Length: 471
Ligand SMILES: Cc1ncc(COP(=O)(O)O)c(C=O)c1O
Image (cartoon, rainbow, N blue to C red):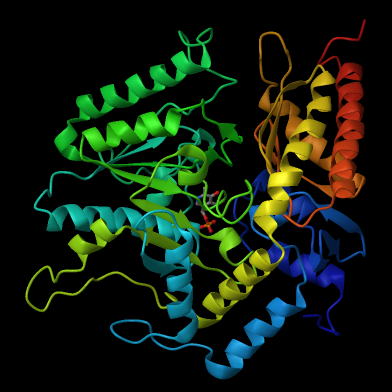
């Protein structure tokens, strides 16, 4: 929407004065305000000043089919005109929600045949945890409530999802929900392993993590631990790919102690790694619950969903008492317009075989990105397919990080922006998660832009004496 009467400067000003942004850095916000993005097409977005940028992060890991698809606009408009919204509580439904649930049941692995809709990834994770507790209450195991998550995990921003999140930087000055409900074990971080595990083989590191996990369950008391939650590949925590066999080992331990395995596939599902879902197809585990959002609608509408197995549904689908109902739901659960957008999005992805093209292009992207390792300040390039992290370090040998005051990833982000590329700086990692419609030339542009930008930042750091002069 473009308002004829409001100029770009006023939009900037109103935003600065009235909008509270997620993850705002208030040390710079008042002065810098926000970049106003006004239009988007394919792999590009355009700001209010007319600058065009290659979107290296697909909005926020979500615009999988690319920006500005007219078909999506039409499907959304059609649903608004047919029936924009009606109450989903109780026994009322709508066509798109019903058809989409059936489709997701067919696409998801195993017996994940039951869908609870929410508004995004955080609410879908929140729903998962509430339902896990409800499930154990109905099973007559009211003590079995604790959840094990991982350091550096990102699971969202509702109270529960923020507590599942294990990224330390997100915790400052916020409260914990309840000290004994959510516990964290180590991230599976091949680049930065804990003391004692630095020199282990991949196989032994996997065993190390599995032992830590099992010991934590024993320490907490198996009768009190309900579930484990994990992203198949950690996203916002720095794009961390677990050692081979990790998910299977952890899954087996969950089963040993009658725990549920929740896969947070908010980022990994719907093509980013070349599969519709990755838990079973790439990692050989059948989760009891899979959480999805983002690529489900490619960001054209907000929608999340918690997919539940037949076994789980069998327990929760019985009335818990006379007159009792499943007291869980949002006004916008099963929103018809969001579900219609998801259906059209999945149709486009199937027609264009988007997972297939990512299976082809992903290895090329991963290979091209390796050239960044030539820089002294690039410690690690990692990820899978269209989910990539580049970790920047002050000392490549010791893996010492830059002090926060250097703002290393932010510097690279700014240099890329000047060159027309948007990347995502998180801590000392540059994240790439572009639309899944990129061509090889776009990948080459991303890599070349990063080469030039990191080179310029390295020169700057040498001049400032932050890193040693070459030679
Ligand atoms: C793995 C994962 N889970 C959950 C979420 C939260 O999703 P939302 O922001 O839609 O609430 C995110 C968001 O980035 C995510 O990456």
